[in-house]
Image (cartoon, rainbow, N blue to C red; front, side, top):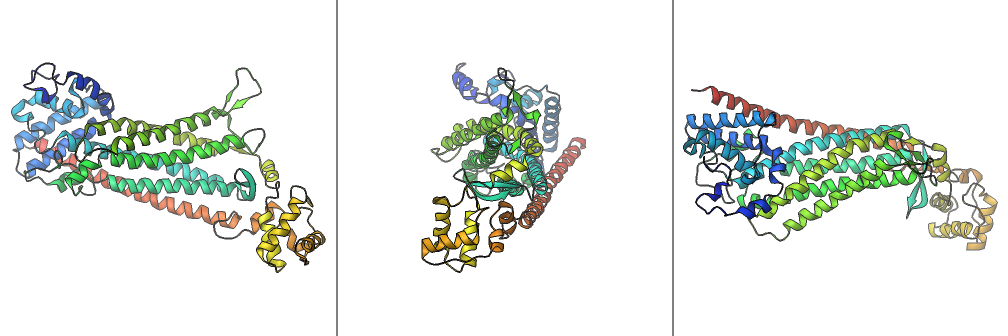
Length: 504
């Protein structure tokens, strides 16, 4: 074609038509669309085979178009298919290549029955589902790393916190399984997103279908989708919305990473001294030879914050758009690509950090004994064994702390002291045996005795580890099944393409 560097819609217009629009509106589309070239070729090839089977296009035309698309795949694989900004996007770049090679009489049927709109919807969904699989596998690695470490620390006592004040004691293993459940939630969210995304938009044309007797279910099958998007206008309106949903879930992953990194940074300070960060994730101070700085963790914390901005940017872009295609949605692509890239880059580093932390068990255990951390356990024990209400027991324990009968913990609490203070507070004596008090006066015995479901006792944490492990294995199987179904469909598509190319 003699206008191979001009947009297809510029035909018949003056030379300045759309000049500024393309320069400004195309933005980084051709750079980002590089990741869509392979998907775009598959989408076009599936559509061409469907047109052939529906007897809408003759075999000789479909064969030539399919062959030209194979050439583009090979050029792209070798880095030689370059997208021209003047042509706006991957769709027009590929169509121009086909038109230049085959002429308008044959190449002009590349997009018979489809448009750039439903093509980009389909490309994006294929890209997103592949990335969800990749991120899900990384999340599985994170979860496995966390529960592996948790199993090593069933008896590693540490303080729990309320308002960042020392509260009920837990174990490091309990803390790690809590993180494991957070990331397990994230994995479940991604699997749900996959189900919503894996519906095929191709064939809705601009946004209201076509009079051609196309078979949308066939193209959906060829491309590995679970089915078609049922309503054409709903499908058009979903562009940008599915990105928002995925970005929301990626932001929650980022939240879980940031909160964890923040705690690790805090606990690695000299004031806490609960743990040390492995040297490969730390740096030194240029002016202070005594420092090892948690630079990697701080950069992770900062980078993950960017995802919140990308989520809000995309949500705000979408919230006022009328039905149908709007070019605003093209601007969501950068946020999607950047966020996915950030999470995929960060999760392996995060996993490595969590796997290599050096735990100071002694300091953790000491931290669990301060600020009368086991006051709730003492209160319950006084209520049950002393046969008084919880609120009466609360008053007695509060007095023991507030009036400084004890210092910092309950190690020196005796039955005599308890009887004396209870009489002063309640006007009646609460009598407990020393053996009753011994069951709640240290962090270790309190943790071991908290056998309620979900609590930090070793037996409960073991149960949680097994639960996380089993659920993760099942989700991994589901993920592999989804991957295999897509691979099977794409392999069948490739087989059909080879058959088409061989036929005379």
